[in-house]
Image 1: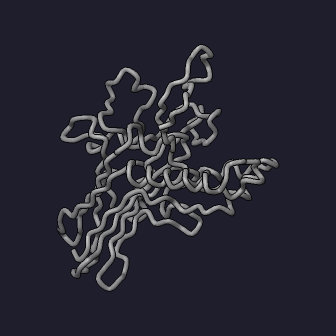
Image 2: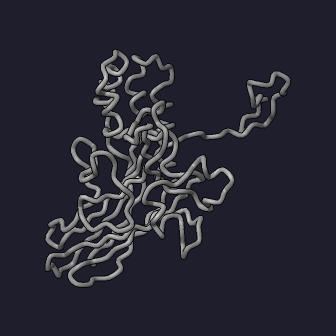
Image 3: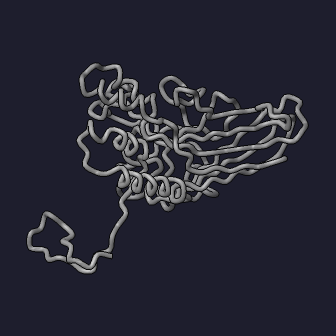
Length: 288
């Protein structure tokens, strides 16, 4: 708390200061931009010290990794040389996840490794260019069940222009063709302002998306994984994780195709920055 009087709004000159005043930590989820700005403080004319950036970055990581998503990984069965698993995500935030600017996305990595170390299945693999292996060129649909490594669960909002073409430019966005960002607990389609925050695309057909036994508002999603074992009968290790990206390369590509001094400068900063996604939550099953 601050003992000195604090006026809580700059818009009302008649307000008097309040004391004591409780300090608030207002952080989001964009560690990438915080780190980029920290590394380019002089070029961007930023007065904040590195230590101040470090403090905010640490709190942002804490928000992402402790207060955003809970992941449960479950083995279901082996049937006809196919192992079945379920990955369930629970939204711990009070809004959709990911939220904020529509570039932000989260993807699920799911890996099955044989006893000798060979990878039997890997969905959601991150490439060296920080893009997700296997995703469709325009956008990846929402999945209820994943059966191939080329299929990956990506939670995101995808916008389209008036012609129906995918766009990342806000001024051209006329509609959404995908919005499977995970809703918060209690989210319902019969809410009076649902039209401002709709679910779009194949998530509407998923009986486990924000539903439990047909009841809306679970704030969760369950994805099934069917893994063909190819005759393998030994032990396996299974790993699942949710990774978060605030500015994925796929989103940045259309802007970087343009050539203005501002874009060129930002691209240099972007390329020099650490683009590694944030590990939000994970689960593992050993010696199955």
